Image (cartoon, rainbow, N blue to C red; front, side, top):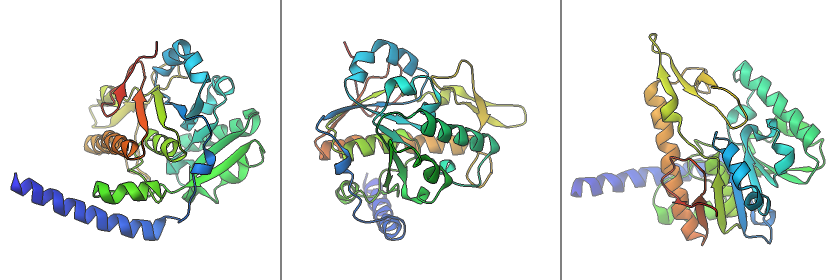
Amino acid sequence: MELQKITNFFSNLLQTKFSIIKIIILSKWFVDLRKHGSEQLECVILGNGPCLNNDLKTQSVFINERKKFCVNFFALSAEYTKVKPEYYILAAPEFWLKSTTEHFKQQRDILTQSFIANTKWQMKLFIPLAAKNSKLCSSVISNKNIEIVYYNNTPIEGWTSFINPLFKANLGMPRPHNVLIPAIFLAINTGYKRIVIFGADHSWHEEIKVDDSNNVTVNHEHFYEKQEYRLPMYKLDGKKYFLHDIFRKLHFAFKGYFVLNNYAGYMNARIQNASSRSYIDAFEKIRII
């Protein structure tokens, strides 16, 4: 027990020191997200998991009555112009880096065109500061309905008493290994007090396969696709993910939700998971009646 306490102490100490360095190097100070909130204190976040099809059908009234956050490639679906999200979150570096797979480049270009052509309502597009001079940002601003809001996605870890005030100051967030993490974080920091999540299956571990050549693939099926969407996963340097890499990535994502749940309490906010199917165990699970 004592050994574990000592280990935790030095782990938190190192994480805290490293976080300070990252903030100094990577973060921009005086980012104000509260001004992008609204008088309405409840919002919904729509993940792109397969269960969102059911959630949109059964909970359309509840969803439409609240401010809506959408993520990633939601704008490629027919639901985009029906839902008309007030907020849209992008987090993955592939959305602005020049070096990514050809498939992602094509999807990114299609997404950009969808933003420009289909966004007929006022929408705030949240994207990390690192993307500020990207082609995507310079393109979507041609649509006057879209306001780009930049945020710090610097990963901050360490003692809770240390990280929560830094989160509140918008200097960083829990490791953004899944777009739902920045989406929840940004919902909290724009001032929403009740955040309800739909479409967050998070069942990738069920969809992992390793073939006879040790190639690891994951089914990335989303609610707007009619069939399995199986692909290998690649790091930013182009190297493929192995099984331990994938489980490590999942570890940080699921752990990040517990960090966010703690932070929500610090901010007097509440996160609820109303997804009809979900493996996330950090948030209160509810069923909308």
